[in-house]
Image 1 (cartoon, rainbow, N blue to C red):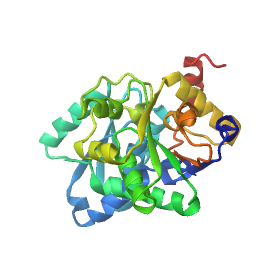
Image 2: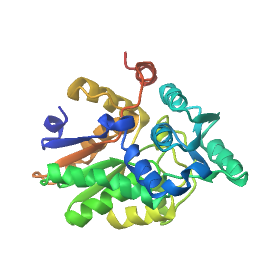
Image 3: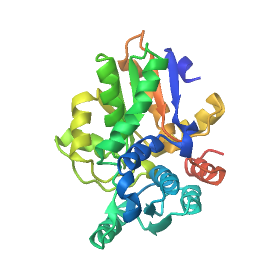
Length: 292
Protein backbone atom coordinates (compact mmCIF):
# COMPACT_ATOMS: atom_id res chain seq x y z
CA UNK A 1 0.00 0.00 0.00
CA UNK A 2 2.74 2.49 0.95
CA UNK A 3 4.77 1.57 -2.13
CA UNK A 4 1.80 2.53 -4.29
CA UNK A 5 1.38 5.85 -2.51
CA UNK A 6 5.02 6.90 -2.92
CA UNK A 7 5.44 5.16 -6.31
CA UNK A 8 8.66 3.46 -5.24
CA UNK A 9 9.49 0.01 -3.86
CA UNK A 10 9.37 -0.20 -0.06
CA UNK A 11 11.03 -2.91 2.06
CA UNK A 12 10.41 -3.51 5.76
CA UNK A 13 12.90 -4.66 8.41
CA UNK A 14 10.45 -6.25 10.81
CA UNK A 15 12.06 -5.78 14.21
CA UNK A 16 8.56 -6.00 15.68
CA UNK A 17 8.98 -9.76 15.21
CA UNK A 18 12.29 -9.77 17.10
CA UNK A 19 12.74 -11.38 20.52
CA UNK A 20 11.11 -9.04 23.02
CA UNK A 21 9.05 -7.42 20.29
CA UNK A 22 11.61 -4.80 19.24
CA UNK A 23 15.17 -4.13 18.08
CA UNK A 24 16.24 -3.37 21.66
CA UNK A 25 17.24 -6.98 22.38
CA UNK A 26 20.20 -6.57 20.02
CA UNK A 27 21.85 -3.80 22.00
CA UNK A 28 21.03 -5.19 25.44
CA UNK A 29 22.41 -8.64 24.67
CA UNK A 30 25.58 -7.08 23.28
CA UNK A 31 25.93 -5.02 26.47
CA UNK A 32 25.28 -7.88 28.89
CA UNK A 33 27.58 -10.21 26.97
CA UNK A 34 30.40 -7.71 27.51
CA UNK A 35 29.59 -7.43 31.24
CA UNK A 36 29.15 -11.11 32.07
CA UNK A 37 31.82 -11.26 34.79
CA UNK A 38 30.30 -8.49 36.92
CA UNK A 39 26.61 -9.00 36.28
CA UNK A 40 25.74 -10.84 39.49
CA UNK A 41 27.51 -8.28 41.68
CA UNK A 42 25.56 -5.24 40.51
CA UNK A 43 22.01 -3.93 40.66
CA UNK A 44 21.23 -2.18 37.40
CA UNK A 45 18.73 0.61 36.79
CA UNK A 46 17.36 1.80 33.47
CA UNK A 47 14.82 4.34 32.25
CA UNK A 48 12.46 3.10 29.56
CA UNK A 49 9.32 4.04 27.68
CA UNK A 50 8.69 0.34 27.08
CA UNK A 51 10.89 -1.55 24.65
CA UNK A 52 14.25 -1.12 26.36
CA UNK A 53 12.69 -2.16 29.64
CA UNK A 54 11.29 -5.32 28.07
CA UNK A 55 14.63 -6.15 26.48
CA UNK A 56 16.67 -5.54 29.61
CA UNK A 57 14.16 -7.45 31.73
CA UNK A 58 14.39 -10.50 29.47
CA UNK A 59 18.19 -10.24 29.31
CA UNK A 60 18.44 -9.91 33.09
CA UNK A 61 16.41 -13.09 33.48
CA UNK A 62 18.69 -14.89 31.03
CA UNK A 63 21.95 -13.65 32.58
CA UNK A 64 20.86 -13.71 36.22
CA UNK A 65 21.16 -9.95 36.72
CA UNK A 66 19.12 -7.69 39.00
CA UNK A 67 17.38 -4.83 37.22
CA UNK A 68 15.03 -2.00 38.16
CA UNK A 69 13.24 -0.26 35.29
CA UNK A 70 11.82 3.24 35.75
CA UNK A 71 9.01 4.18 33.38
CA UNK A 72 6.79 7.24 32.75
CA UNK A 73 3.04 6.96 33.25
CA UNK A 74 2.61 7.25 29.47
CA UNK A 75 4.33 3.90 28.91
CA UNK A 76 2.06 1.17 27.49
CA UNK A 77 0.44 -0.85 30.26
CA UNK A 78 1.28 -4.04 28.39
CA UNK A 79 4.99 -3.16 28.55
CA UNK A 80 4.86 -2.49 32.29
CA UNK A 81 3.18 -5.83 32.89
CA UNK A 82 5.63 -7.69 30.68
CA UNK A 83 8.69 -6.27 32.45
CA UNK A 84 7.28 -7.18 35.84
CA UNK A 85 6.53 -10.68 34.55
CA UNK A 86 10.21 -11.09 33.64
CA UNK A 87 11.12 -10.68 37.31
CA UNK A 88 12.48 -7.14 37.17
CA UNK A 89 11.29 -4.34 39.44
CA UNK A 90 9.26 -1.55 37.79
CA UNK A 91 8.90 1.95 39.22
CA UNK A 92 6.40 4.26 37.49
CA UNK A 93 7.01 8.02 37.62
CA UNK A 94 4.82 10.89 36.40
CA UNK A 95 6.87 11.64 33.29
CA UNK A 96 10.19 10.96 31.62
CA UNK A 97 11.96 13.80 33.46
CA UNK A 98 10.89 12.35 36.81
CA UNK A 99 12.00 8.91 35.64
CA UNK A 100 15.52 10.12 34.85
CA UNK A 101 15.67 11.99 38.16
CA UNK A 102 14.73 8.80 40.02
CA UNK A 103 17.46 6.92 38.17
CA UNK A 104 19.98 9.54 39.30
CA UNK A 105 18.85 9.05 42.90
CA UNK A 106 19.28 5.29 42.67
CA UNK A 107 22.68 5.73 41.03
CA UNK A 108 23.78 7.75 44.07
CA UNK A 109 22.67 4.80 46.21
CA UNK A 110 24.96 2.43 44.32
CA UNK A 111 22.86 1.23 41.40
CA UNK A 112 24.58 0.91 38.02
CA UNK A 113 22.81 2.91 35.31
CA UNK A 114 22.45 1.42 31.84
CA UNK A 115 21.52 4.23 29.49
CA UNK A 116 20.55 2.88 26.09
CA UNK A 117 20.66 6.44 24.74
CA UNK A 118 24.37 6.87 25.50
CA UNK A 119 26.00 3.45 25.35
CA UNK A 120 28.29 2.50 22.47
CA UNK A 121 27.93 -1.24 23.07
CA UNK A 122 24.17 -0.90 22.79
CA UNK A 123 24.41 1.23 19.65
CA UNK A 124 26.77 -1.31 18.09
CA UNK A 125 24.34 -4.10 18.87
CA UNK A 126 21.53 -2.19 17.20
CA UNK A 127 23.71 -1.77 14.12
CA UNK A 128 23.49 -5.50 13.42
CA UNK A 129 19.97 -5.01 12.07
CA UNK A 130 21.38 -2.75 9.37
CA UNK A 131 23.87 -5.42 8.32
CA UNK A 132 21.00 -7.86 7.84
CA UNK A 133 18.83 -5.31 6.05
CA UNK A 134 21.42 -4.30 3.46
CA UNK A 135 22.41 -7.94 2.91
CA UNK A 136 18.78 -8.84 2.18
CA UNK A 137 18.07 -5.66 0.18
CA UNK A 138 21.33 -4.42 -1.39
CA UNK A 139 19.42 -2.05 -3.70
CA UNK A 140 18.27 0.17 -0.81
CA UNK A 141 18.93 3.87 -1.36
CA UNK A 142 16.96 5.43 1.51
CA UNK A 143 16.37 4.02 5.00
CA UNK A 144 13.99 5.56 7.55
CA UNK A 145 14.67 5.06 11.27
CA UNK A 146 12.57 6.20 14.24
CA UNK A 147 14.61 8.20 16.76
CA UNK A 148 14.24 8.26 20.52
CA UNK A 149 17.65 8.57 22.14
CA UNK A 150 19.44 8.06 18.85
CA UNK A 151 21.38 4.85 19.58
CA UNK A 152 19.57 2.85 16.90
CA UNK A 153 20.01 5.70 14.43
CA UNK A 154 23.73 5.89 15.23
CA UNK A 155 24.27 2.14 14.95
CA UNK A 156 22.19 1.72 11.81
CA UNK A 157 23.62 4.76 10.02
CA UNK A 158 27.21 3.82 10.85
CA UNK A 159 26.77 0.26 9.58
CA UNK A 160 24.90 1.25 6.42
CA UNK A 161 27.35 4.01 5.49
CA UNK A 162 30.30 1.66 6.02
CA UNK A 163 28.86 -0.81 3.50
CA UNK A 164 27.16 1.60 1.10
CA UNK A 165 28.49 5.16 1.52
CA UNK A 166 25.94 6.69 -0.84
CA UNK A 167 22.89 5.43 1.02
CA UNK A 168 20.68 8.07 2.66
CA UNK A 169 19.51 7.60 6.25
CA UNK A 170 16.52 9.59 7.49
CA UNK A 171 15.61 10.03 11.14
CA UNK A 172 11.95 10.17 12.18
CA UNK A 173 10.51 11.78 15.30
CA UNK A 174 7.11 12.87 16.55
CA UNK A 175 6.42 16.48 17.48
CA UNK A 176 6.97 16.84 21.19
CA UNK A 177 9.67 14.15 21.16
CA UNK A 178 11.89 15.79 18.55
CA UNK A 179 15.04 16.15 20.64
CA UNK A 180 17.36 15.10 17.79
CA UNK A 181 15.79 17.59 15.38
CA UNK A 182 16.14 20.35 17.94
CA UNK A 183 19.75 19.37 18.63
CA UNK A 184 20.69 19.42 14.96
CA UNK A 185 19.04 22.82 14.52
CA UNK A 186 20.86 24.22 17.55
CA UNK A 187 24.18 22.58 16.70
CA UNK A 188 24.28 20.86 20.09
CA UNK A 189 22.05 18.70 22.30
CA UNK A 190 19.31 20.74 23.97
CA UNK A 191 16.82 19.79 26.66
CA UNK A 192 13.21 19.69 25.45
CA UNK A 193 9.87 19.30 27.19
CA UNK A 194 8.57 15.92 26.04
CA UNK A 195 4.87 16.18 25.19
CA UNK A 196 4.41 13.49 22.53
CA UNK A 197 2.24 10.50 23.38
CA UNK A 198 4.87 8.21 21.83
CA UNK A 199 6.62 7.17 25.03
CA UNK A 200 9.29 5.08 23.28
CA UNK A 201 10.57 8.21 21.51
CA UNK A 202 10.36 10.51 24.53
CA UNK A 203 13.98 11.34 25.38
CA UNK A 204 14.44 14.91 26.66
CA UNK A 205 18.06 15.37 25.57
CA UNK A 206 20.27 13.55 23.05
CA UNK A 207 23.63 12.15 24.10
CA UNK A 208 26.65 13.95 22.61
CA UNK A 209 27.99 10.85 20.84
CA UNK A 210 24.64 9.93 19.29
CA UNK A 211 24.23 13.55 18.22
CA UNK A 212 27.67 13.50 16.57
CA UNK A 213 26.79 10.35 14.61
CA UNK A 214 23.51 11.86 13.44
CA UNK A 215 25.16 15.10 12.36
CA UNK A 216 27.77 13.14 10.39
CA UNK A 217 25.65 10.41 8.81
CA UNK A 218 21.97 11.41 8.67
CA UNK A 219 20.46 13.03 5.59
CA UNK A 220 17.73 14.85 7.51
CA UNK A 221 15.19 14.53 10.29
CA UNK A 222 11.46 14.27 9.61
CA UNK A 223 9.01 15.29 12.36
CA UNK A 224 5.39 14.13 12.22
CA UNK A 225 2.36 14.82 14.46
CA UNK A 226 1.22 12.20 16.96
CA UNK A 227 -2.07 11.81 15.10
CA UNK A 228 -0.24 10.87 11.90
CA UNK A 229 1.84 8.30 13.78
CA UNK A 230 -1.40 6.76 15.04
CA UNK A 231 -2.78 6.58 11.51
CA UNK A 232 0.49 5.04 10.35
CA UNK A 233 0.30 2.42 13.08
CA UNK A 234 -3.20 1.45 11.96
CA UNK A 235 -2.17 1.40 8.29
CA UNK A 236 0.50 -1.19 9.11
CA UNK A 237 -2.19 -3.41 10.60
CA UNK A 238 -4.58 -2.91 7.70
CA UNK A 239 -2.18 -2.80 4.76
CA UNK A 240 0.81 -4.90 5.82
CA UNK A 241 -0.88 -7.12 8.41
CA UNK A 242 1.78 -6.10 10.91
CA UNK A 243 1.06 -5.24 14.55
CA UNK A 244 3.32 -2.27 15.31
CA UNK A 245 3.60 0.48 17.88
CA UNK A 246 3.42 4.24 17.43
CA UNK A 247 7.14 4.77 16.81
CA UNK A 248 6.91 2.43 13.83
CA UNK A 249 3.68 4.07 12.73
CA UNK A 250 5.51 7.40 12.49
CA UNK A 251 7.56 6.02 9.60
CA UNK A 252 4.57 5.98 7.26
CA UNK A 253 3.76 9.73 7.25
CA UNK A 254 7.50 10.47 7.27
CA UNK A 255 8.06 8.51 4.05
CA UNK A 256 5.02 10.10 2.41
CA UNK A 257 6.25 13.58 3.37
CA UNK A 258 9.79 12.87 2.15
CA UNK A 259 8.90 11.09 -1.11
CA UNK A 260 8.91 14.29 -3.23
CA UNK A 261 12.56 14.81 -2.22
CA UNK A 262 13.63 11.35 -3.37
CA UNK A 263 14.74 10.37 -6.89
CA UNK A 264 12.27 8.41 -8.98
CA UNK A 265 14.42 5.27 -8.78
CA UNK A 266 14.77 5.35 -4.98
CA UNK A 267 14.41 2.07 -3.09
CA UNK A 268 13.03 2.72 0.38
CA UNK A 269 13.64 0.75 3.57
CA UNK A 270 11.75 1.14 6.84
CA UNK A 271 13.14 -0.13 10.14
CA UNK A 272 9.92 -1.26 11.83
CA UNK A 273 11.37 -0.90 15.29
CA UNK A 274 8.77 -2.52 17.52
CA UNK A 275 5.34 -4.00 18.06
CA UNK A 276 4.83 -3.89 21.82
CA UNK A 277 1.35 -2.47 22.01
CA UNK A 278 -1.84 -4.04 23.32
CA UNK A 279 -5.22 -3.97 21.63
CA UNK A 280 -6.40 -1.79 24.53
CA UNK A 281 -3.64 0.77 23.90
CA UNK A 282 -4.15 0.68 20.13
CA UNK A 283 -7.87 1.32 20.59
CA UNK A 284 -7.11 4.17 23.00
CA UNK A 285 -4.78 5.89 20.53
CA UNK A 286 -7.21 5.44 17.66
CA UNK A 287 -9.87 7.20 19.75
CA UNK A 288 -7.33 9.94 20.58
CA UNK A 289 -6.88 10.57 16.85
CA UNK A 290 -10.64 10.51 16.26
CA UNK A 291 -10.54 7.21 14.37
CA UNK A 292 -13.34 4.78 15.07
